Image: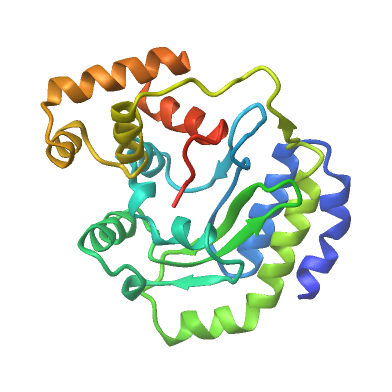
Length: 243
């Protein structure tokens, strides 16, 4: 734990988000991890300049993860919205077919084992600090986690404190939630769950053209061009909450 205490001053003296994240990278590596992800999502009904996410994961993996909306099958994300306890994960932590596929794909990018520390901020924001290493999970990994878990938890708290100056949450004043039809809400809920147009059409028993029609209306009502932006705005305005 002394390593993190020694870095308190560096975190306190950081003058930008980038400097804080650089300190996190150094701390994570000193604790035996190779990569990390730090993300903060605002409370439903609260808005800021955007979700904050900084990752040292391979860029190709992040692009693939976002494009395929793998968040909906990611047990680390689900855990953070339901618990405050650290989630130590390895291959057996991914149980469904979709989760196992996610783990295999992540492993191919060197993300084999890690620990996710949930963040529940004073303003209602939710997030995570996830530290990852490219090891075949086993006893050595679990022993390292046991030895370093208190330092990791302290690191999470120090980072949140350091980042509070740069991530401010403001109440929504001029972004009223649009009025949605029942079908638009149905489509929106399944979009948040990561379903494709074809899957939504089967679930709702309507044509793919019908689904696309409703999604087009959603984009217009939220004033955005992309499906992911519809989901983000719906969560920000409180219409939809994450599972």
